[in-house]
Length: 248
Image 1 (cartoon, helix red, strand yellow):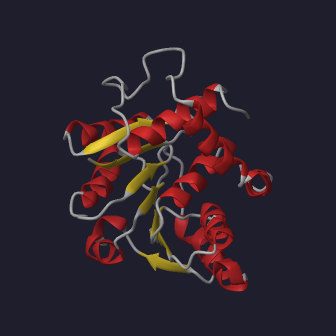
Image 2 (cartoon, rainbow, N blue to C red):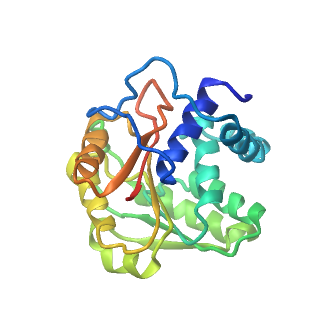
């Protein structure tokens, strides 16, 4: 990666939107209308590139463990953690791989911020593709791992349905929310509705953005006029992809 690469240019453009430095030109479908990434000044690209390269070894480590996140998504998530210091809330923990990654980022940044993770226990739960799934079983194994590694002592596990935990989230006042939970439009919309009650700066990074139901809910939130919106256009295939919103 280097200054001028399409990924670096587009990611720098997205972060400028989220930080209020420019207005986004994404269309009503949340898509960047041009085949070419936006023009972004080189100093902004150089700053982002330096932040990304800081996480090269850590991303390589986790890319070998799981295909859950595209390496580009891990780079962007690490940069978001770096740029928005404060408590972190992860909705949809499952096996805890992303939790471990974020915890290591915080540790390398030498920050004391806590990482709150949420997962439900619901037998008979079905994934967005209709397959049976029981997220609580994977989460139980993750909880054991969280307590066996000192770097993960900052993790605060929360068991329950995120849609019923709004009061808890308000008390946490997260500056970064990583949303990787319910893939139904209604479920994502309900999670995003929680954001309306936060009266502090934050960024909400949404995974699985190439799932139509997920993107539809995010675009509905964007249409309220309350948020800046950026589509990082990662994970062009499958159900991956990152988008982000932050209060105007």
